Length: 398
Ligand code: PLP
Image 1 (tube, rainbow, N blue to C red):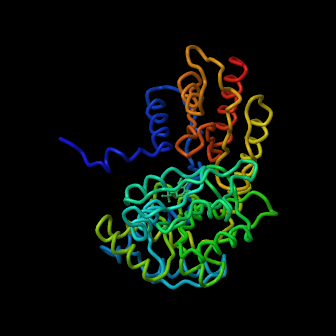
Image 2 (cartoon, rainbow, N blue to C red):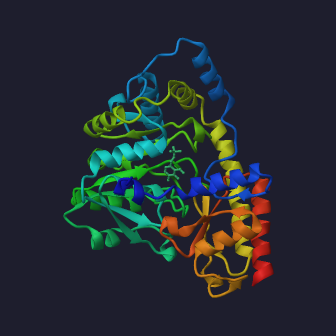
Image 3 (cartoon, helix red, strand yellow):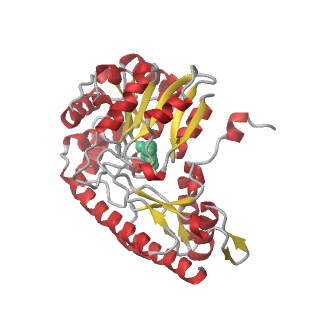
């Protein structure tokens, strides 16, 4: 029995894998701290849960429209207009099972066999895998740490070809925490327009910015021409602590939205209706809860950044947004821990897991071999214990 090339070549999501491994060991009585997952430990807000219960106890619709119930798509357009001043209509919106499915729908709608998609590294792992699954070719641009890991039009110029179909932008970024300024995005958008490219703008961390001086810009807000060629991807997972509810969305030109809904009609149909009503409550429930969550996440980020910068051999940029710190471990190379000579972030991640019961994600899956990624979405208690374990690892071995 031979599986398809697609199935054999696709890689498992590294952060989901490390999380499952940590959870399984904890069930067996180990004390593994998980700084691998981008999942905030805050509960889903009560008013959202109550709306879900009310929906279950009411007259639930059966199958809904593939692209989601009209009230939700209307509320989404209203919220996007209120937040970013960009006007969309319900026909522009497709509700999906998380941002992940929205990305899959988008990439499968835009990217054909051998079409090239520009992805800046460090990148979120699924972009690569989804482009490959669609038969496309990921073209990776390795951005520079000293430039805050942000891609520039000059770098784009060097890799664009007649086969380039799209650029993926992720700001705030997973795993680097970089947030593009409006003028940086304008320059990229201008490049996309001149070269007739789509922009896939993954904005799932739009609310997670920790500096008052930095403002989030949605790529879709950069004018009609840019908006037409942009697919905005977002999710309820991070903003409303709803990872397991599996609900996200895309906002796109109507022709693209239609294509995405067609694809989704053959894969999952509509998102489960309880989550749709819960998401509606999230959009209508005000942003106070988001603001208090951000204050707490900033506290965790600041603590983690400080502790990492106090440790010798490790180096990281202070993330402006997102949920992660990318830590460069290359100064440990050549040293031995037991029999293992450290040659990569993956070696460090393995040692931390096997010897220090600490789950982190190895940077190679993000296109950054010299790094490990730590998440400050974990509880403060876990962050403190987790960083203590990294400190022990450093003190005991170097
Ligand atoms: N995009 C980025 C950059 C992410 O980090 C994640 C999840 O970690 C997603 C999309 C997927 O989000 P969702 O849970 O809504 O599928």
